[in-house]
Amino acid sequence: MPIDDQELAGLIARAVARLDPTIERRLETEPQAHLDLAVLTYRAHEESGRLLRSAVSSARAAGWSWEAIGSALGMSRQAAQQRFGHRPSPTPGTAEHRQLIGLTAFNEIDQLNEWGRHGWHSVGFGPLFHDVEKSSTQWEHRRAVIGSRKARDLEAKGWERIGTMWFPWTYLKRPLDAPAEPGEPV
Image (cartoon, rainbow, N blue to C red; front, top):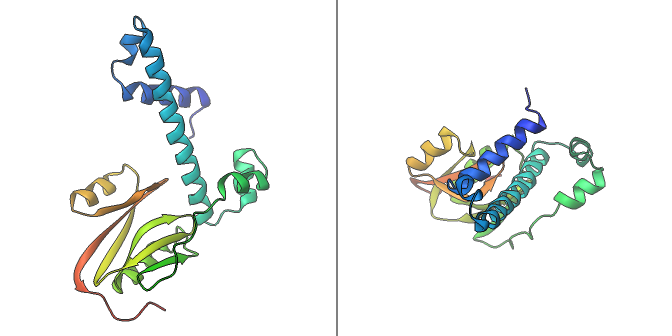
C-alpha cells in the first residue's frame, strides 16, 4: 500500500538529515547549520528531479503513453512530453559507435546481449535507446534495481556500471573471455 504524503515527507527529511549526521545537533546552536541544511535539501531536490526524469523515461520504455504519464503526474500529455521528452543527440553512426533505438524495458537486455555476442557493449543510455561501442570481445549486459542486493553482488563480482542510472535501473556489463562473433545481429 502506498504511503501518504506525511509519511513520505518524514522519510525524505530523515534521508536529508542522514547526509550530515551532525546537522540536527548543530541546528540548535549554529547559524551555519541552517545554510548547510539548505544545501543538503537542494542536493536532495536535484537528485529527486533526476529520479523523476528517469522514472518517466522508464515508464515510456515500458510502453506508457505521454497521455497516461501526464495523467498520473497531474498534467497534460503535452506538458509531460515537453518537460520530460527531451532526448540527447544521437551518437553518430560509425563503424565503432551505434545507437540501438526502440528498446523497451522488456527487450533491451536481450537486444544488448545479442549485440554483445558480436562485440558491442553499452556506453550510455536513455529513453528507448542505448549507445553501443564495438570491441573485439563478447560482452554480457545485466540490469538491476538501483541499490538492490543484485546490483551490489554484480559489482562485487567485477561487473562494470554503465553511466549513472536510469531510475529504477542501474545497468552493468562485463567482457566475456571469447572473441566477438563476426557480423552484426539481424
